Amino acid sequence: MTMMATPDAEVEVDEGIVRALLADQHPDLASLPLGVRVEGWDNVTIRLGDTLAVRMPRRAVGAEIAQTEWEWLPRIGAQWTFPAPVARRLGEPGRGYPWRWSVVPWIDGTVVYEAALSVEGARDLGRALAQVHVPAPDDAPVNPFRSITLGERAEVFGDRIGHLEAEGVIADGPRLRAAFTAAAHTQPGPRTWAHLDVHGRNVLSRKGRLAGILDWGDAAAGSPLTDLGQAAVLVGADQVGPMLDAYLWTCEPAVARYVSSSAGQRVIRAEALHHAATLACMDEEHFHEAGHAALASLRQSLR
Image 1: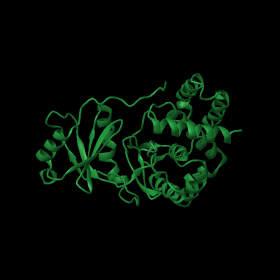
Image 2: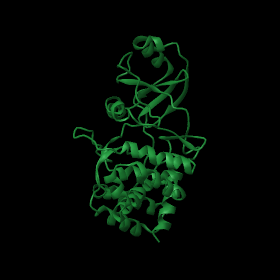
Image 3: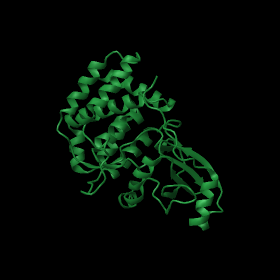
Image 4: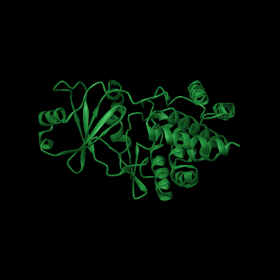
């Protein structure tokens, strides 16, 4: 039994409500065909014509965190060279639908859980994250769960390792907790913008290369090493080196110094452990399998 399951939708989003809202608020788009539907934890994204998509919160928390995508992403992502779903239009509540919503670019690609990144794709991801990790202003949002330090997340990590021990998945929990604790006592590094939810359903590939990074609702001021630890889980042990090499070539100098240090490497490993344990405790197959595979690799590296 796993700890975390996809939450139920609080509002049903169907084709009828999408078409009605488009007709009322963006009539020039209302005749475009609706296509593929992708349902996440917080949002439903439905393809609109060839180049657009309608993105609608399915839970109140999704509507709340979407503010970051609408208000900040156009500013911080203006110069990015990789595709991201920066809103083209915004919609208002209506027709019984209670929240704001958006029209975003449709990014053509396959989620990495179904089509892994090649080595060059891992390098693409490193370069993309380097573009994200720039200093955040004082009024940048703070993610209450992911902007916090490793020490502040130690209890959650311990709970998840304990769950995996109880399930018989791992037998060396104390060693994993010790590695995490050692990093948690490390001096924090630079604070930048960060995506904070880098996993295989939020990263797209096309022919092995990076096609785009999705779902920026959790983005906030935080540690760039949180993203790097999550990305290490995503690309796998064989591609962490190329990803980090590409990242270090283009990231902020202060970030590069910390990432290259022994302290930074400990923190990245601990962030990867935290992320892998989280994924392993989820019920969705792709997350579950990715977490188990990453834990096995990380445990081997700690021996």
